[in-house]
Length: 146
Image 1 (cartoon, helix red, strand yellow):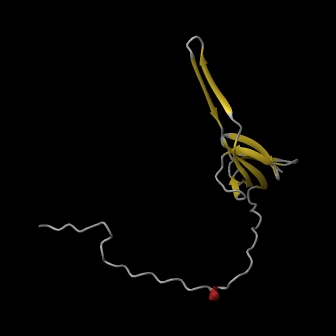
Image 2 (tube, helix red, strand yellow):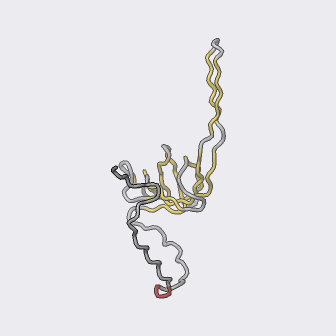
Image 3 (cartoon, helix red, strand yellow):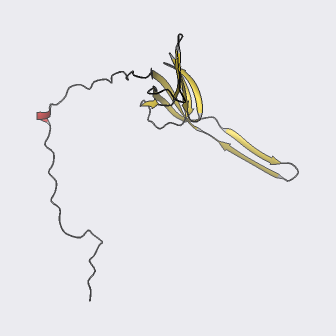
């Protein structure tokens, strides 16, 4: 199964376990990201096209790396005017590994269960709230009329 997704103003054809480099996506290393702009989902037999997006479809991915791309040199020149400007730019990019393609009606694979720890009865009691005082906060002095 494959999908065509849109992220960062570009379109990518992805399948499960593909590794792609896209424009910066917010997420920490190892965290899961859902890409909701799915334009097409298909396999060998049939394709589902969106108008413009496929309803309810998402692509789940894992953040492999956050890095900066190679430097692009921007050089401007006007002939015979002694005008030259040289700048460099490095774009922030994210490397994603596609973990799952979720079509309409399908649900994300269940998350790993946490080991059973303390029961509700064994939890520590929460601290009681301190009573509010009617004093003015520091620095805010009451004005007196004289």
